[in-house]
Image (cartoon, rainbow over all chains, first blue to last red; front, side, top):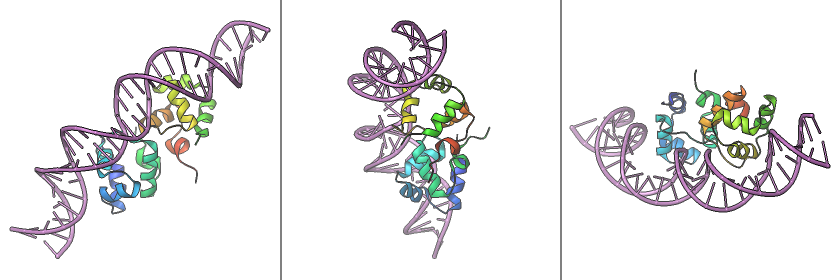
Length: 65
Length: 65
DNA sequence: ACAAAATGTAATATATACTTGACAAAATGT
DNA sequence: ACATTTTGTCAAGTATATATTACATTTTGT
């Protein structure tokens, strides 16, 4: 399923997928696929994304329900 | 680095690595390697582990510092 | 309307998460 | 002391996260 919390946190920082990708050291397609819900990132990448967006794991990656 | 928070949360539930592995549907060696810090699990596996141990991502997988 | 940037989405390739099977060492129970 | 469970670890295989390149569509700015 889509990760809209991530998409929205990224928008709140006014970062493009490209810019976030560069900030955390992965490709733009990887960020795109994570937002789209296409795959299942590693925890270390999730932590890097959280740091770049000033969020925690629970805020961006915990499932609701 | 070792994940002692995971090891301790597992101990608090009195589960062996084997039992936790079965509860979350991975091999025992995978749990062992995660506790040992040998690799970088996927977020979905982390979430399953958290659910099995009644913890959140921030409690078990967020880095201190 | 146009240009530029941002996003969606393929195909092929590589690194690594995870499996299975196996064995030894350490811990636990009786 | 012994048996059983738990943990550590290795080697070889499979599945998938991520990279790279490329192109089409959508969005944004002027």
